[in-house]
Image 1 (cartoon, one colour):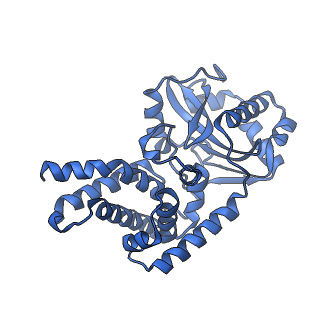
Image 2 (cartoon, one colour):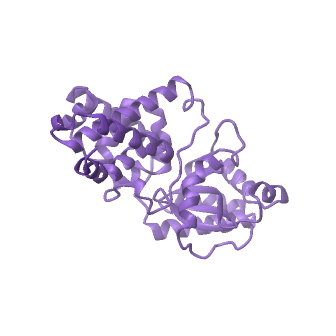
Image 3 (cartoon, rainbow, N blue to C red):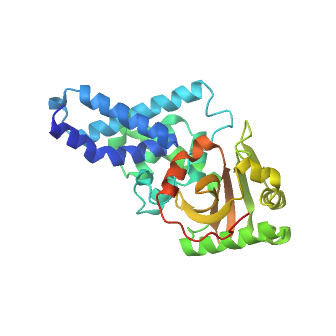
Length: 312
């Protein structure tokens, strides 16, 4: 392959990776999809490709759709055992974040909700909300009609909005302050204060410290507060599971504040929060090692703030 062709692909690599991550919810799968797109580009009759960016977007999107359909056919992502892979703020795979829609499309809450969409609905939603493609362009990418694209987008937005039921976007400083107060209440045993810091329709999803075969889902403020209090209560068994006594840091993960449990510089677990109107609207706990690899690698390469808890 000539240098010009390689350079054209590399100019689109970051955007393709961000697109693939939103579609697949997995950085590793997104990288594989981008590499497969490169192989297709390498084998293509490039002299007949009028707009390389559009061609690459079409190929990458449809490769991701093939992966989603294959995973669903094998029941890998519909059995309730799957969570998106969290990414540390600044990861280029998070992609465009200029608008509220772009930031929301990469949040762990929305990535999890998008699992309930049909693959083509998910693709239309991502292409429209995160990358601002027109319905005419989406129709060309997915080989559907423009009207079908509009219908898929409407259904996807309606389903996501129905599940979200949240207020205005919280600014990072205010959201962090809420999480700090929440963590202080959780580690002090103040269950009543925890309840007060949760929205009426709070939801919580967890992989059970990486041990559960199916995701654990909880609702109601009292139930979530009770589980959080129990989860944040330190015990020797939990320390053994984590590999030591973790330091607790607050960082931005997929655009939202998260508490990271860090043992000897290694991220052993993460709890991501979504804050709405000064309260916690959702929590997502992830401790499975295969979901934390990229987050852990990024954490080791940056200078973290001082922990909010030195040794848990």
